[in-house]
Amino acid sequence: MNEEEFINSIDCCFPYENPMKWKKVINTAVGISDNACFMVLHELCRPPRSSKVGYKTKLRIFNFLSKRFRHPLVTLLKRIILSMLKAEQVPVGVALSGMKIVSVYENQYNALAICLFSANDRTNKTELFYEHVISQWKSKA
Image (tube, rainbow, N blue to C red; front, side):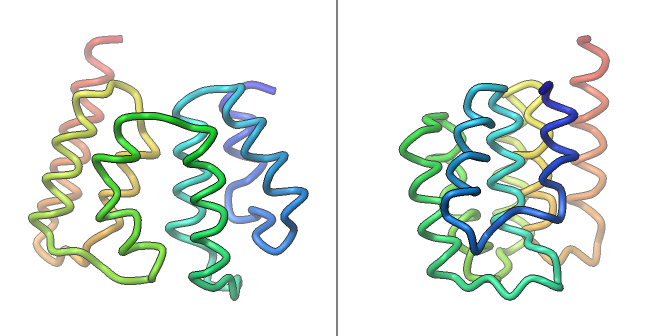
């Protein structure tokens, strides 16, 4: 399974309530790519509205993921991640700071998306910066 197939396989259908399945999904992500692991994290931070997954479950999954996926961005974005696990938003400035940090790690689209959706930005500053970062990454490809 490649990264795109993996991402499509868990998008809006992560098995939050089945530890055997989510452990397998995480182990698969670790074997694919950093961006695949950030997709798992994205699903934890932004579960579908139809999902009733609670904070404790999300935190348990996050802790499992953190032990297997050691990437500097997990630590650097921890404030944003933990807020999102609690279904809380961060200030726009915090989201933008996170996005600036992620921008250094090329092609970490899902980490960037976590920051994008972490704030309720009515000014669209985060959206504009998101598009800028994506444009920079694509110009280097």
